[in-house]
Amino acid sequence: MSTSFWVNGEQRTLDVDPSKPLLWVLREQLALTGTKFGCGIAQCGACTVHIDGQAMRSCVTPISRVEGRQVTTIEGLRGDDGDLHPLQQAWIEHQVPQCGYCQSGQLMSASALLSNNPNPSDSDIDAAMSGNICRCGMYGRIREAIKSSSVASTSDEKLFYNVAEVDHV
Image 1 (cartoon, rainbow, N blue to C red):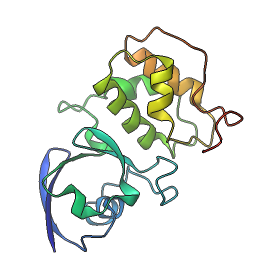
Image 2: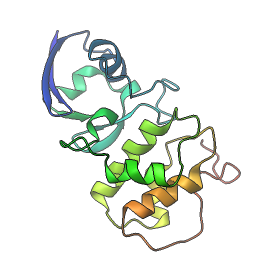
Image 3: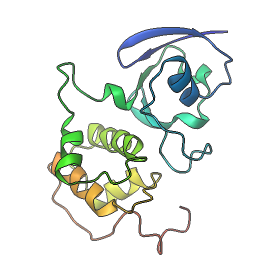
Image 4: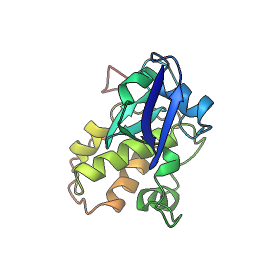
């Protein structure tokens, strides 16, 4: 079955099984390998992409659900001029990446947050990032990078991935 959709501004039409997860279409058919496989059950956030501007888990999204829609991957986060997205620059400035595996999903969730809420509170950041797991524990740096990319200034001191407080991670 043929599926047509937009990926990082380019229209693509592919003949793939309509139930195939978007993640594997991106990685295998389109060679966009920045989106990572983490868990396969939408619990870790490594596979996060934007679908029509919303952060979505591509590992559980069948390709049939993106028919006619706009998909943005980490490769599409850069501007047309090739410069880093301000959030990517903040990630570097705050030394967020450690192992780097979760970073594309973290960046995609954070950029969706800032697109919808350019001045997020710490609670807003916690809610938006709650589905993204960082095995290296860089949550404080992630929050600071998000805040420095916005005009956020409100702090309620809750760190969004305090494992002792979050029973669903």
